[in-house]
Every structure is written in structure tokens, then in C-alpha cells.
Image (cartoon, rainbow, N blue to C red; front, side, top):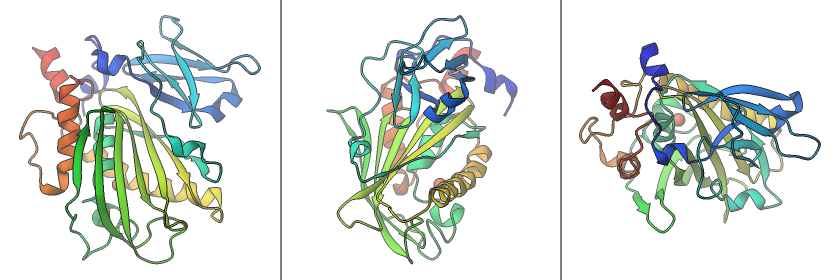
Length: 297
Ligand SMILES: [Fe+2]
């Protein structure tokens, strides 16, 4: 990746990207006062508020930005969001473990992170003997759709054989999944909970686009698991995500192509096809190859 791609920030942000909510750090970081980070090509400063008050978030020019404290994270926007950050009803269930996993930096488009999160085909090859194992490599047919009533992408009826689906799993498990993409950079999955047959574990991936080709991933989990230690839950998630990072940083192009047939999809990719179509409908260009093509023209 060239610095040129990483730092290309010249053109205006499209409304679908500018007016959305993004996670820029964990609430626990406020204990240390504040921090400077980056969002969509701009420096952003986060400072703890006065006792009991919400944190202050400012852009490079000192302009105050909208702020929310939700799901253990600080959320902000460079524009004027029409609504609130995506609802996650499971977050309010009192018996769930809420695990904020800490951020991982990745030299890849944030849209690539979301797409990788949706992909089951890589489980046996990238998360070998954990989330998948040979010979169970086939992705069974599942359903992908853009839900117009909520303007989200969903993939349902997903199944995959997993040798170690979670910290609390004992032995292999045919794991069921549902995937949800709530905003272009906010996604979550619902998967078979080894401890409660009728409920799902929820794993969220809040992606902070730093620049078109650089991002930070903030995984947050809402689990039914009274037994596992926090350290083990964190270590498991971190191990999985570091395995993903190797793949993500080697994908080319670094930015996500939205042009038809830029990358040949298979049946296993139907969630990715729906995601890209949805991004295109929203005219999302940040983090895609379309934006580079435009700024070069
Ligand atoms: Fe993965």
C-alpha cells in the first residue's frame, strides 16, 4: 500500500459516510483523561467530561462533534447523524457478559474488515482447528438480503462445523450464525451459544476508519458465559482477530472494489455481494477503489 492511498483525504466525504456514527475508543480509556485519534482522514480529540458529564470530542479545527457513550465505547460523527448508533437489544439483557476487547489496528480498508467478518469460507484455513477444520470446508447455502425496513444487510441460516467455537465450547459443534451489517462500518454476528440452547452469543465489530486504507477494529462481545475468565475471553478474541489481520493486510487492492466482476464471487460470498450492492446504493465511496478513481480523474 502506498502512503498516497493511506492518506488520500482530499475530496469531500459523501453524506452516507460523513453522517454516520463511529466508535473512536473505549469508555475505559477516559479514565486516563483522553486521547487523540483519527476518523475518516481527520484528527479527532477525545477528552473526559467533567464529573458525570459525557466526554468531549472535537475535530482538528476545534469544532465539537456529537458524542454517545454506548456498548462500552465512545461514538462520534463528523456530520449530523439522522438517528442513534445501531440498537443492540441484547446489550441490555442483565445476565450477559459484556466484554470490550480492545482495539486492533489494521492496514486495510475498514470495509474489508466488515467483509472479512461476514466470510465463513476462511474459517478452516485462517482459524484452523478453532473456527473450522478440514475436511469441513464447504460453506452450506445460506440466505443473504438487504432488509429495506431497517436498511441493514442480513445473512441467515448460516452453519459451520467448528472444533472450538468459543472459550466455553467443549468439543466440536455445528455452529449456527446470523450476520447483521447495521451501518457500512458497524457489523455484528449472532452465533450458537454453547451454554444456552435457545439464545445467541453476540459479537460486534465496530470499525473505525482512520484513513481509506487504515482502520481500527473494536470488537465487543455480549456473551452468555458465567464461567470463563475475562482474560481468557479477551485472549480468544485477540487470537482470532490477529489471524484475520494477516489475511486482511495481504489483500489487494487495499481498498474495496465495488465495480461488478472486480473479484469473482462464489455462492459462499452471497453476503459480500449483498454488502457491496448496499454500499453502492448508498453511494459509499470512502475505503473503496471508486473514490481513488474519482480523485485521480
Ligand atoms: Fe476470521
